[in-house]
Length: 530
Image (cartoon, rainbow, N blue to C red; front, side, top):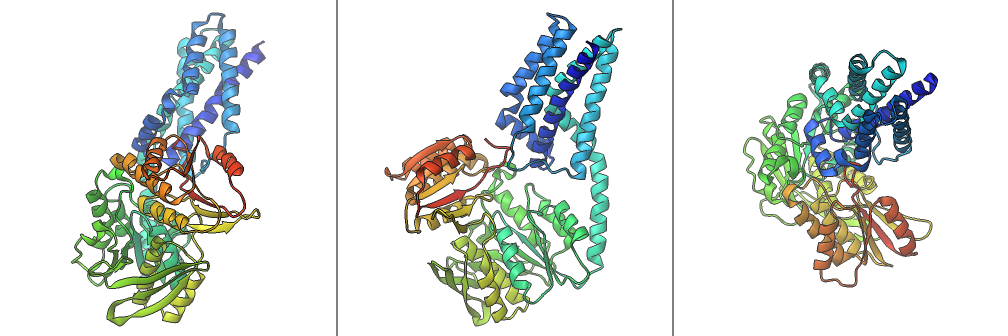
């Protein structure tokens, strides 16, 4: 029977092992910030979920010893096995990445739990082996109930270590950059559009220069550091650095590392208002890039956004660009015409510069991002024929208004990456302009919009109502706001459906869509949102 007690104790710990792994995944999705993780806990209700409450019930039931230590072990062991199986087979959109930092946090969290178990065994284990096993299993169940606190404690304990490690990496990256004084460095930031602009710029500049860009969403200081240390080569001539920010000072920190000579501000809008609070704070943070440029540098800023156009730039030369004929802009995109083969448009620049371009991309936001890339390329001396060729070859960035057709004859418009108020409106307008069968949109709405969360999602719903025939709203996070907006559009013909998950939405779509229909996927929320 003692062997069974050992097995039940181990089973209780297996449940904790998998729960800590899930908690670490969510901490990682919140950029290892305890404050953001706590916000997620508050919004998701994970601390009082059914499984968490069941854990507390099991713990107190076992402690009551209504049927002795053996029965308590049995209850805790069964709960541990069920927890392990539930989490082992769970599917996540963005699974845990076992980075060195993640491993360190997990190891420290495990040590905290082992320490709790050791104390429990010493204080409450008694003189029998079964009593000690019961106390160790109880410690595992207690740690399961408080696993959020355990993972945050581990993260906090490691903070001095992480600072020292990061400082060493940052200094190494700075040394590498100092060893390349001729490297042209272009910083790109904005509430939205920065990733697309970075990709477009990389494609055009690569026609003439050996060009490196920060990959994926490596737009934090440590992401840039990793790019420099792992990818930057002595023969690179241009380095394009995407600069993201969730707090004031984030972009200044990246600039202090890379020292860009050219800066591009693509937009200032209500993205990440949850952490910034006001649009003025967003503006100040995005313009940290422009403020950091040297006296002989140049800034390219998008005057199609009020909080960009209204920001004076007097520390460096500033070339403003527009797709909407904003006053004061020296770069303009005009005669924009969409067709089956993409978009044709004309670019006007300073000094009478003019170039006719064709791209496979759709939507005003893409043209705006291309305009910024063309302006920087012209500034760096790329020939017109190379610009024209590169623009014509650019493929849509994955999940950013990319279009494909299924074997069943359904057109898929994929705009699932990081939806925002401007991009989502453009996506809806593109859907509304497409001809064929039913126009179907699948969306969970937008996130991180602070006090404007409901208002801006209701506005998105209104655009859905004006441009779609069928709307499938996914999840509960923005359901009320989106439905309110769809109904406020005045289009009573639009068919409104609700789904708790994307899997359920796909099932609905399969029963609705037929050949010739157009399906727009607008945003795809991470696992931290319901």
